[in-house]
Length: 201
Image 1 (cartoon, one colour):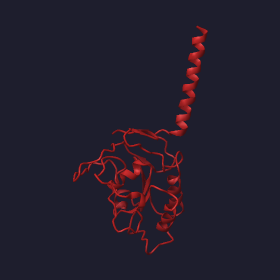
Image 2 (image 1 turned 135 degrees about the vertical axis):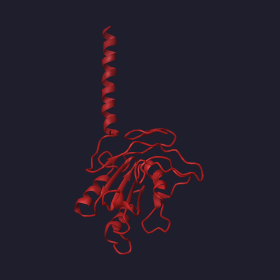
Image 3 (image 1 turned 90 degrees about the vertical axis):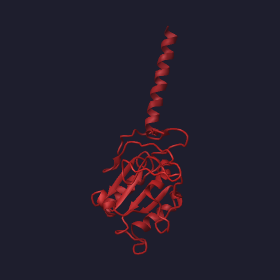
Image 4 (image 1 turned 120 degrees about the horizontal axis):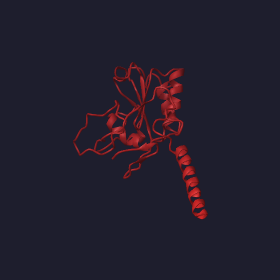
């Protein structure tokens, strides 16, 4: 009997250490490290048939849900590219742990402001994979006047403007996990696990 007790206590201790380690490595869904972050229910990540569309995303721009049959080459997208991907086409980037920086093209123009927001994002793209910077008209109407919206899997952060406060929010969001949202949610194709909770197929 004492031997069984030692085995049970040892097993319990190992389980407690494992749970603690998992909490450090995989922070829970409800952890919000950046003020203003919005988290949405997971809508899965199935791929639509060729020509099929989906218009019931629970956030705009979408942060999870059905993806077009062929997603955009988002890992190499830059603000001055001619072919601007639709938000749904950027979902594959989000499921790989990336971040999309959507900006209002009426407020930020790469030609007129190379040293501003877009210049900073261009520089950051040299050091970060899975970071797309995409113009998207109508952000302010949908997000209370925001001129920037950051997106990670299931997560949005509207930012009013790229000023001191906005830059602090943007920087905090773009930090690596677990403090920020870059790489926090990394889904593995063929399995439903993500780094901060469970996703549905």
